[in-house]
Length: 533
Ligand code: TNX
Image 1: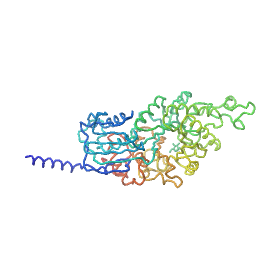
Image 2: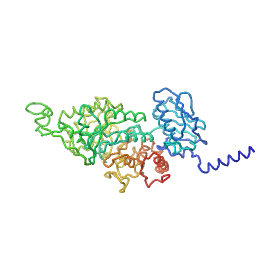
Image 3: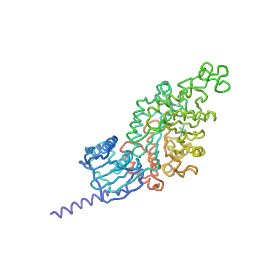
Image 4: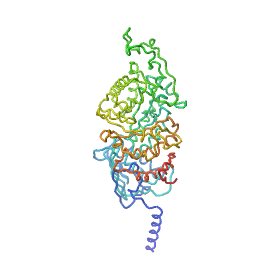
């Protein structure tokens, strides 16, 4: 009798296996792809008794445990307690050098994530979550088993700066939509979110000492919609929401070009009548900006088109620097991260000499408030302060100028990393001035060999910017960012010897089903055989 039972259950088991063989760890669809993986030959099954066991002392440990539990509870319906007392999923802070590295060991009766820093632990948690069946992404209880393959992963990022950028100026993006984007960035182990907060079409961050910036400058956007802005409270909320997911916000105030929204808000920032001889009035020996009646400046008109390169601050006026000082001071106070982005791109109507003078003075202001400047690659035509970063997007000769000064490069080549470029000529939104960027183009490049003049020791990291001239809502953001954002996340995380387009293609196809469950409207690139499509 017992024997019959055994044969029966083996049969059921075999039948089950035939329907759904447990995948090997090395065949799982992790993105970004880890540095090292070893297969075991069993499974770990999450069950109603499972719990998260925290080991180590850090205020953030509970947060990481709760984050994991919150991802696991809805679909499984399990309680998943988080405690220092026990549980089969152990999150342990240990000794080690790299706070972003982690190891994940899956045995039949337990899972252990080890890391020297909280960030590493969080990345281990992300890998673990990706190993569960895609139904784990449901918000309601699913009746099924929750098995993952045994084995081990040892992993760390190739680059320390793995970023995304949202242009919240051309079209305003709500707090809620930015948070949703942050959630997805976290899944792919991205750690910097650059917010392009100001441009010709809109000023999106409250500055208490210059309130008309948002009152007037925040009142519209591309196409003439109502625009919007973040109050300082809302901005702080984004900073902390991101920090909980180990993402640092990098605020950008783009200047001296791309500044029409400020110029429309305050007449006195405009040069007005051009007195001869630049800076000082020869009669009164006063800086021009104290002589409002003499220069009689007019506020510019609000702008809702998409031309670039036609606006500029007045680098010769002292009031410009008083203004920049207040703006940098207020934003720096709200920003715990190390960087402040000063823009600096496409200042086509600023005199070359004035541009250099402006960038150098603004770098000093940023440094006075304890931040390191990042700027688009053009800033390298000025003398950069040590440690400041040039964001390469267009001109290799600018990147070279930065490297020759001993400064680092953030890699965002428009031909590969620009999420606002169309996939092909049929894409429903997007621009194509730099290139059409299909998924393979976004994936198949190596930051360290992209340009002869930029090698790995010069590279701080990689960032994928989403410019929003053609992006008006969450669906548009998702269409342009998925699947290319995960592709760029892998470019930034996984060393090039571990990457291959074929491998990425076969792994990313499984993510489509997860995005569908989450309501993420991705672009189903024809280069991929999407699962469930
Ligand atoms: C160039 S990239 C710009 C942006 C535009 C973008 C559109 C850069 C530093 N400047 O102002 O939004 O192209 O693709």
